[in-house]
Length: 512
Image (cartoon, rainbow, N blue to C red; front, top):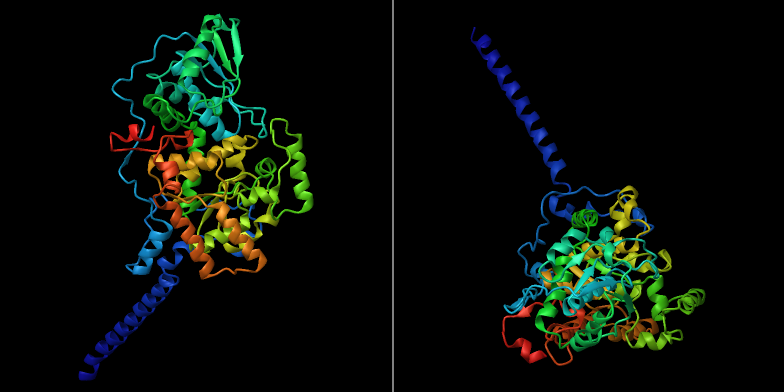
């Protein structure tokens, strides 16, 4: 009888033991699945295409999963080294108490009565046209003109048929500047056949030229047509309110059209899914190399092709260029190979995501191979978006450039390989927005180091890295010949108009 009482207890014990074993087994299996690899290890690696997927840097990839959460700040893991790496590679610089420069002074008035109409034919690529439009807004204010929405360049190297409203938000542009200049979409019918003069304004002209010589044309004409827009207005000695008007036009009124803004933000979100990223304006494109006469590391056939392009482009005035002398003066864009050496020397690891803000790289894979080998995660519009998503922008070079502009503005670090219009515009806009850090390579000094590498006099390693880091550090220091002095502590070249005004009220009188 006693043995029968124990039988249920024994069975219950066996059942409980089996259940415990099963639970333990499931728990162990679950831990195995979730901790290999850890979320920390997956932060970059599981989003990186495998090397075999990057055989062609221009190959289109399926768009990555879009995270709805904002990008977190790079984790420092509490270590001194982690903080040091963040400081060195990603931390934005201090704004040093600067303020934005768009607010008009108390003496600024509404626009005077219009004396006629100003037509504008812009010229150049996207950023050249942007700066020209801002100049023409200021000119219209100076000569009391009604500005007709500018006509964009459709004849230059890029052959882009886009109109103003295809690239910029036309209504926003007009409304934003309503208290500065009267702007209309097209010339009224009543003055279509009115007397007009086509005039190429003298480059870098000041207030006197426009107030006297150009404004005097109203006596004989109702319409003044500017045949070019770039570099028309002086860089210095303009009244503060005219400078600030140019700033407002550039950074507040010239907003991209909604379809460009939407696509640009989508590219930024997809780029951020890889983590903090560099936007590299790799100006190693056919038009740039042909225009500048730079042929370093190119084959004789490639050099001859570029020479012929320059020779046959009528509006490029300089035909005979010594490429060796050009490079030694720091006037050539860095090659993709040189950019890779530069980034490695600065300490950016090979897993750094890099967005290539550029058109077709000259020579394609043949010139991109070494940069790809150093930094496998090279992304571009064509990689981040599908053919269907980019189809509306194809064959419109300025719209494609606008997408690159947006991704560059939003990047954690912006690095231009050449200090052209795009580089200056993006650097200025980022400084105006207090956005990220910008690294401008000292090309003249760098090519000397790169030549020593080619000659075997120097090898890559700590010595080269220290030299390049020291070059960059000295460019950031205050001083008569420093990059900061030249671009941040004087009023402007147009490219500097983004510069926030310091709190010192006497600053303006000190620099003009």
